[in-house]
Length: 511
Image 1 (cartoon, rainbow, N blue to C red):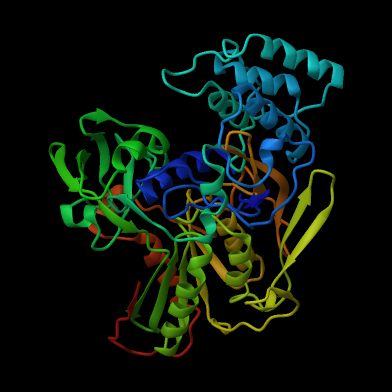
Image 2: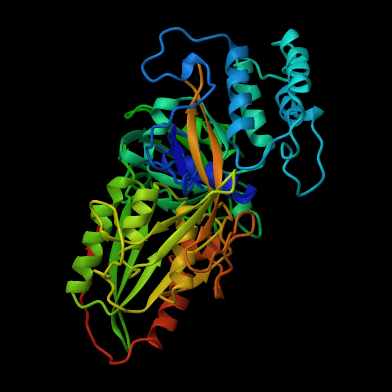
């Protein structure tokens, strides 16, 4: 979960990879996912990570460039690095060793750490020591930033390295503060092909390239014959492995332009060539359907893509409509949900949870804060709530490696409150809250500002993830053939939880 100076989002290396892909995915337009910053790491419709609460917070001791309002002249790169350096040391959830940050800024070949230890974590040196370290770095800038790729901004490279050195999914560099600070509040159209792509590292055995896990209905990719389960080998003849970087950058583009993909498809004897004409795409935030199920009647399946504010209406409406159609059990699919806005998390969780704590955050100084289920979903008033939608019906929650931040929190709460049972794979382990702070040149830095725990279980699953009650894998072959063994196992369990059988052939689709 993130907050912005603030906004907020939620981390683990696997989620980083996933998020990058999601990005690639979601927009296959712009990159960079994130999560519940003040709760999660979500993916915005434009492919950028989605943060949390738009809470404007003054950044004490920050350069004038942090003031709100348009910036007309970029400030010197060294000032950008220093601002990020000071913010990380002052705001990060744990104390950070200044020397480690500066070494990280210089270049990856100069960094070393023991496995499992955050590179920048540690005791803070004295002010004199920090100033000496900084002066040494600054005196040789930009030469002090080693290995800068051709055409790259040395200051941005240095800040990105500092954030990456913390190995925290909620701490990252943003090239555009204004864009990313409001990403969770909107649902924008973008120029792309309309797919979600995940890293090949999310699959076993590992495929030869990033994998398409969603193809938006009636989108450019769908019309061109791209399928879920396809692994992307090249884009316009260039081999791609990094979803957040080269893949996303190459696939996104202006509507009407063409992009050529080489793909590996399960069952195919040779790579396939597909040309897609880019179009204007709006990523679906909610996808819902009803399936008739022998023995229990109708089961409602609702997939929530991200915790962005525009998703609440479609989510609540879909559940209401399906309930009115006679749904007697639910499948909530969070497998591709990377987190998002904490306010939306509270509203959605309050549809299931009848009052009580939803989360606890613990800031650097040790100050705890409890987030409660709300009885007034519009005003956010705290207090007991009456479940408005599920009314005690059984709920199966689908989770996976790309379930992060706010999505992990919702899944954990539903399990702790004994409302839902988890099916799928271990989640990303991207737990925490974060805020975005503006840097002098208009870029920004997301910083994890507090640890996160589930509401009544007080579980902190950062870097660990949630273990599902029932582990079920969905392979590329399953995707290519249209099979979903995770849904199948969930429905099997729901059959044991619903008493009177109902027969129906009705099918409802909501998008």
